[in-house]
Length: 255
Image (tube, rainbow, N blue to C red; front, side):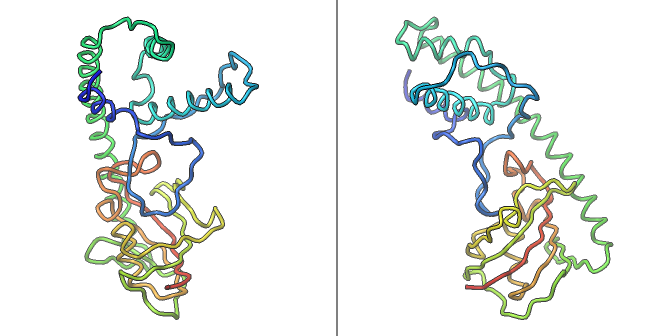
């Protein structure tokens, strides 16, 4: 339907399939995507038996295309019947019910309305998270043993280290456990049972600052304001916009 249509489509559809059970590798990766919807308590029955590799592979593609769309546009945004009709006509080579011009015009209107609604929702959630984070940091600041730095970063030493301090250009091996202010776990090398290794300057600003103050062998509990974490963008689907984050960080080794 033309280059402009395909370019606009990338707003909604990610360029590659992202399998639903993928895990984070470390806490400093770039944010992308939209929050995923909660899975239904009861799943509908499978319409057809999935026996052959072709059937299973086809299902996998369909499911992951749907999962990608769900992350991008949110639940209830698409008319499922119309969407499936478009997929069926396209994949079977049938004549489209709408002309290319009609599709492009309708698609642009749909995307514009969707973006407007998403911006409104994001702004509302962002403000809620900002206030929640400020309240958490104000209360945490009064806790015994908590140090608050000029940047707003807060930490308490759980275990003193005896080794060297890393520089920004060093690579470190750490164990960590990350939660939101309400205790919801969003990432944890401890739970995976596998330490993470990465350059000090390749993670979020709060981590980079904290790690350079720690000694090898130390374990800290760190509260990171949103501006030193993922900021307005957040890191969907687990970290919303303007979220304050809490980490337990153990610096195992400076490489």
